[in-house]
Image 1 (cartoon, rainbow, N blue to C red):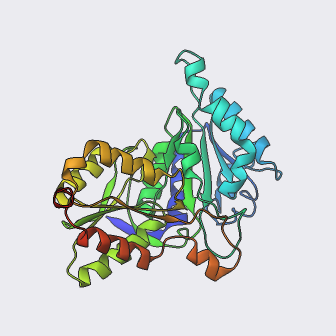
Image 2: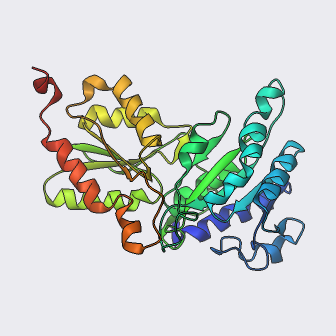
Length: 334
């Protein structure tokens, strides 16, 4: 059985269930206790678990990340909620030089079961310091796991798995997804890292996306279907570890790839996925790989300019059409 619930409620269920299961799990952040968090993910948890395990912090991201990493090294399982991913930059030394390196520097004996929950992406005109998609920064760092769920079911299952990991997890949500609804299975629901999901099967072109780009990509796929183009939409769900086999299997079937990311194109995850496809599935491709990404600019404050700076449904549709109408690469080489 399953129920339809909001993304934010699915996250709350995951935290609640894991706090009940494991007394070492606690959560800290700005306004997450009495106020229940800016996105109401932690609403009600203070009454249930008390101030020792659900604790508000000052506006001091470096401090709360440091507390979380230190507590994880000492044997607890902290969740640190950072209001905007942009603010995580204040704690990058603890994330990159401490949490990510601790296992190696202890000869494999040390563990850092630390989960940083935060949200990023555009929406609402909150401007350049509150709208970035920075997953590529964490993706680049060995020792970190990077998770970006797009549905309530994925959010719950992946967060529960994250809270059982021995290593640091960057759990990246999107501000536009908190109020979205979806079916979530009843009972114990845990999703293993590194297992992507086919959100829509298809045979003509593979559309790869994650986080808030999944709803837009699915809408693009429906528009393409009306034109007779059968697009497959796949969601890695976790960028580290990446379900490379799912991606390559889909490319072998469709022979075309369009990768969609909200983040700026330069130095992005999409480019790395494109390099994997180029190296390991080159002879399966019938067209150049298309990347649809944000412009290489800071996110504007103006709502229309903000919208223009990141991929929209039209952009994804056009990229898929280009891929389908491209001259087959084998013929183009002749």
